[in-house]
Image (tube, helix red, strand yellow):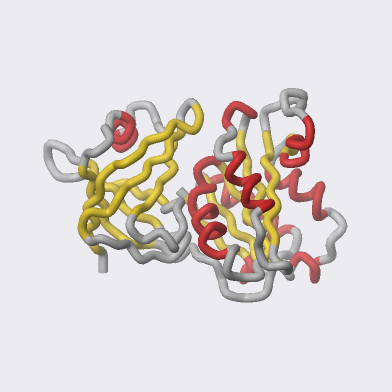
Amino acid sequence: MLFTYKTLLSKKIQLNFNTYLFHFDLIEPKEIIFKPGQYVMLKVPSDKSPVSRLYSIASSDTVKNSLELIVRIIPGGIASNYLLNLKEKVEVTFQGLAGMFSLKENEREKIFMVTGTGIAPILSMIKSKFQISNFKFQIFWGLKKYQDVYLFDELKKLTTTVIPAKAGIQFKICLSREQNLDMILGEEKKFFELGHIDSCFEKQFDNLTIEQLNNFDFYLCGGRNIVESLRQFLLGKNVSQENIYFEKF
C-alpha cells in the first residue's frame, strides 16, 4: 500500500554542475518509516494529472521527520525542471514507499558498485547501519571526471568515525575519463583510481579465489546498462547470483 507524504522543501544544495541534494521536512504524516534502499515517487504537478518520478532516499532511517534525495538534473526533463526551479518552503508531495533493494542481514562483507546518483541508496544503507552493526562496507563509486565528485568529505568522515571494532568503511572513487590523478593532492589520492568500476575492483581483489569472492555480498546501483554489465562481470568471476543484489534506473 502506498502512502502520500506531504513535505516542505527546507534545503537545496548544488553538489556539482548537474547534481543537487534536496532536503524535505515531513508535514503529514510527521514521520516516514522506511528500509534503507527504498525509494519514493515524486508527484510533479502538471496541467493534466501529476507526473511521477522515482528517487531513492539518501538519508538515514534513524531520521524520521525528514528525507533527502540526490538528483541529477536532466535538461528538459519534467521532474528536473520542476526540482531545479523549486523554492524553499514550497510544499512537495511524494508517494511511497517502494523497492526491495535493501541490506541482507548476514555476516558477509558488503561491496557496493555504483555509478552517479546510484550512491544515494548506498549512503542511506551505510548511515543507517554502520553504527549499530559489525558490517564491513567497501564502495566502488564510478564517475567520469574529478569535477563530478561530490560528498567526498562526508564519505571520508564515515571512514574515520568511531564504529564497532570489527566494522569498517572503505571507498574508491573510480574516474573513467581522467588521464591521471595529478589534480588530487596528498593523502586524498588513496581514495581514487583511474578507470571503470570493474578495473578498480580487479586492482584490489585480483588474487581472490572463487570461494573468497563468495564471502561478499555485492550491491549494484546505477544506470540499467552499467548495472547489467557489472552483474555479468561478477558472474564471469563465478560469483553466485544469490550474492548479487541490484537496482537499475
